[in-house]
Length: 215
Image (tube, one colour):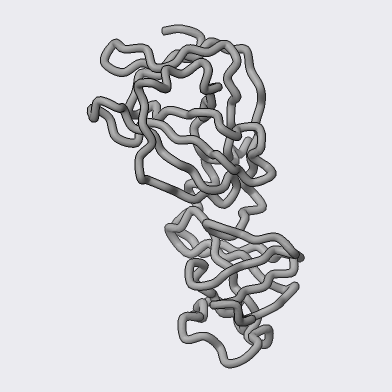
């Protein structure tokens, strides 16, 4: 019987999952080394979509941090899970933000000629024949549009900021008349893998009427 891999990922989400990584992982806190290892394990705790790092007890520079927790599973004996947000992380020589990189998740960013329109309450906010489609594992396709194809005079930057482990830090845009908060976002300085979407604007389809190739 054929296996739907995307469905399998969902059905296993409530189980403890792990995957070894050969990358050198380093954690620090306030500039002080915490651990260094080439034997880290990525651990998806039950119900979690993104992984955490688990590192061997012997990899700590000093005492085991109080925030480190053991996992009750024989496959991970001798490892401790470190809460990502409490430390600064490097994979090899590059900073990691948001959460550890998932080896089973990827970005495909493709230039397209499809016709994308975005409306709110009958008002056209954007229309483009040169969108950039971003395909991210497990997420809906996102359509990023050049600012020249967006009525930016109807938008104003909000104070909201979010972080993506693969794309970087996003700034958000709201409708200037106050009728729609954070309906779009933009990456002004994306990470290397997401460079093709620099300064492009993406709208939430949940807050707009976004049509691809017509109704």
